[in-house]
Image (cartoon, rainbow over all chains, first blue to last red):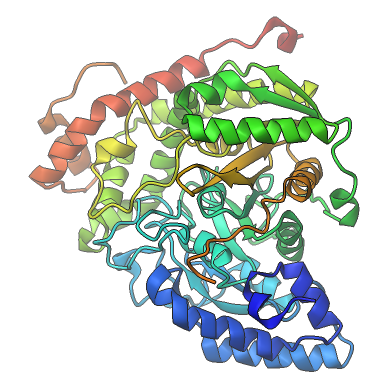
Length: 470
Length: 58
């Protein structure tokens, strides 16, 4: 049983078992979480908004229901939180433009989590509209990496990564357009799961690029991430992107191991852009997967990270600029400098280039599909660099729009559309976490989850946390 | 979408046609990043036109 002083770093499912068995009170758990948020959030900036009274009321309701035997499932009584793109109370998308905005109706995923009995602690920091890098001069203070508070936690779901890594929530929901769930997961040393496109409703979630946006959980274990996903997935007629085809993740997906699974390593895609310290951790992860019985083979994707990021960004900038055009035409003082410039760049993309990017996306998807015809999973680092220092002010646009971008290997899964998980695979010599990314076929989320869980259990990196926040 | 570098005035006019104003210091940053944006668009076009492998066409 988890002791009181370990509680904030316990896994969601461990705590859930204790709640279900009435060994732990949801109200005590909520109070402990709110107390820790109150103490640490001024240092870490994970939360923009904390719903203290409402969370305690939800916890009291959960306690009464569980006492009556009306247990709703693994999220019942569990403190979780949402990125501030999900409509729920004050909803700002990290932008001064929306400061003071209060959502009229909550996002569908929030309602589903609430129906599953979750205790919703608050709203989490984000890069402005899920894009512009957070800086020390922003209207909303930036979230800070729990492993080194002078560094970024990775984005754009910055607060989600920090809250889960620092024990300020037992799970969180972010959004992922080019890696925004998996990048903070990798940089903060937690699990980030981008499901197959369309499996979690994005109704009433502020968009970045609707054809790429995917909702996904961050958690302290793969099993926790699966439980969070299972609580909110399912078709939603309010979201035109919501898939009619749905999947289920069950306990079997976490117990079958990896023996016999075929893992492809598309080294031509990621290795030229990867820092040696990250490559070393990744190679160690491959050794472990082989020891576990997976068939790991080298393969070739025939694409560079620049090609994939260029296509992803042309689509993202164009779609985001179309959404934000009314903001750009109006009083733009509320938009941050980098975001306003990125949106202007998006307006300069001609229709013909956007259509070309959509066709290029098909080409990339076909190449990934060809690799996944012969492999069950593709493995690569999540990102090729360690967490950057937090910028003091807005980054120049040429830092984002560049032929030498920071190598985010996450974009491949967004452009392809299939599932991907980032799972911790150790620490670099600088003491910063490194993520292993596993990608799979669309709707075969179960195989990716199965391998990520098996690796996590064997490698033992799943329970690491920074000593700065005991 | 050719590789010709557009002048600052052209970028300004294209944005103004959409009703979006751009301050001189913003224009300077946009102009600096524009060649890379063009390069991204060229990459997309090349991949868009890449034929499928023969096996995929059967």
